[in-house]
Image (cartoon, rainbow, N blue to C red; front, side):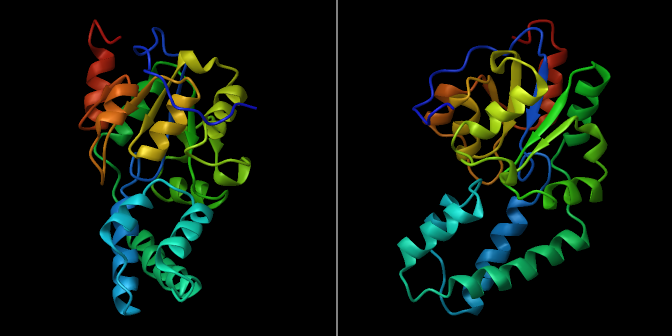
Length: 233
């Protein structure tokens, strides 16, 4: 199994792209902002505001890792179980009310499906929840494969989730493209050796991301336009 290491600069997008692997939250679904609001509102209601830098560090990270970070940063008196229970209620209410797709989500999925390119999902959301959310917004049928937090030992930013997705698709990582919005997701995909496109959501691309990704783009629509251009490498 691959070990987590500092990613190297990603190559240009493969030509042809033999598989596309997407993150879900913040990349295809506009859920990161709703989760962020749920955390903020819950922390305020508990009378224990969570610093902005801590909330930002939680983006794209699985719950197990975030619980460890919160306990470490906020101390043993922080009501961790209550924080997650109450924020889950707020977040699920937002999901039930209907969350929009990220701009261009259906457009880019249609592009790959029409081109006959296998499409996978690689998410830090636990199994079952991911499929449920995709089905709710009408995206589940696009995917040939869904890899969730429940499928791996090491979650993002470790490369295991992306390596597993590429392996199950039967495609060399170098022949795939990964699409991510978060720092952890970019680290995971690039460490797996997958040319990666970052479409930032809550957090802008930093020098670290721009160094290792193939492209930083403003939207999924821009990615579709890039792939249709004659020199999309």
